[in-house]
Amino acid sequence: MAKNWAIETKTIQCGWEPKNGEPRVLPIYQSTTYKYDSAKEVAMLFDLEAAGHMYSRISNPTCEALETKIAALEGGVGALVTSSGQNASTIAIMNICSSGDHFIAVGALYGGTVSLFTNTLKKMGIDVTLVDANLSLEELKTTIKPNTKAIFGETIANPALEIFDFEKFSTLAKEAGLPLIIDNTFATPFLCRPLELGANIVVHSATKYLDGHAISIGGAIVDGGNFDWTNGKFPEFTTPDKSYHGIVYTEKFGSLAYIIKARVQWIRDIGSYLSPMNAFLINVGMETLHVRMERHCENALKLATFLETHPNVSWVNYPGLQSHKHFNRAKEYLKGASGVLTFGVKGGMAEGEKVMNALKLAAIVVHVADVRTGVLHPASMTHRQLSSEEQILAGVTPDLIRVTVGIENSDDIIADFNQALNTL
Ligand SMILES: *Cc1c(COP(=O)(O)O)cnc(C)c1O
Image (cartoon, rainbow, N blue to C red; front, top):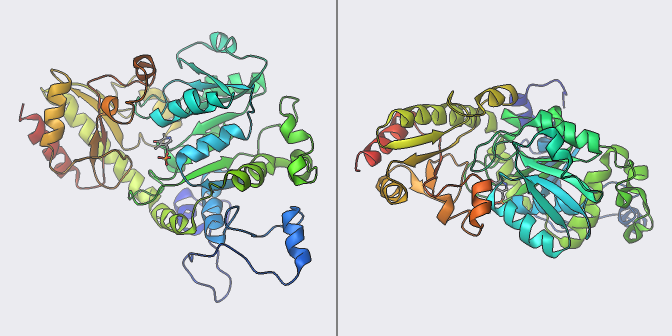
């Protein structure tokens, strides 16, 4: 694999690299198990003394090809694919924080992530503070406690569409000696590479644009290999792991310590690895990532521009619009503002619901990042379980309609929203 390839080439060529006579296209290795010639070889795998596949709960060649591709696109040293995006976020945190620890998350987050952090991780004794992204660096420093172990945020927040302030939060993370974890789902590595902007770990819901066709649930964690786990705050990385005959991850695996620990501890014990079939499907989707993302961005900007001019629309939120509060930040960090926009209909939710029901091309779906255009009402759907304060922090107002703009012809998409808005 050529390191200097452009991202368009990497999305197609990285990952599966067949040797002479092997299938050109990534095969589905639908096997739970692997054959070895001697018991000693298997024992060495179990001791992490040799690299290789032993059981598909922990690794699999089809999944490994996808991991190599995602790591190459993000510019990381390694990746791990998981059963879902939710699982990627869970393991990304659990691999760092234990009961009694604390982490900081920027409040504008995906609803499922808020619920995971504030309910389920809390039950496991891991405490989170959801911070307002507008706080100054000095104010943010006061939220860091002696037991704080990580900082978490989203590149483009779902559905607030706020753009993450990489400069401020990576400075905060560096000064405090904490890893910065970024959910890069909405941007994808085609539009933004957080590791180049100061992040240390990237997580994905591969279910969204990486798959791109609404066919498989999956997640990924990418390790930047650029964080010093030996700074005294992370004993789990620097002291012997009893479950592996006393391995010390930083000593044995160096810059791969984080991602190997995530696999051999968490994936081994929790059992939430991606299936080879879904890895195959996500890999096929990713082969067109760069082509799709360009069209998603183009169509979303056209629809957002149209909606801003429609008399029945009260507001439009899209980071590619000059009117967006983070327009300049989006220009600085992103190659495009992705395919999701939000808007409000004049009158409020009742009128918004009428518009949603009148759409013909755009379907009402819970999903985002599909080739097909869809709409959703977060306050009554994805963000329903959040308290009203959490909804406000997540940027969800009662009248907000989220549009995932597909890659159909933009004139047809605009015509559909126009006829639906004109029914009012
Ligand atoms: C959908 C989503 C998730 C959760 O991913 P699943 O694959 O549905 O588990 C996490 N973060 C963001 C930003 C998402 O949009």
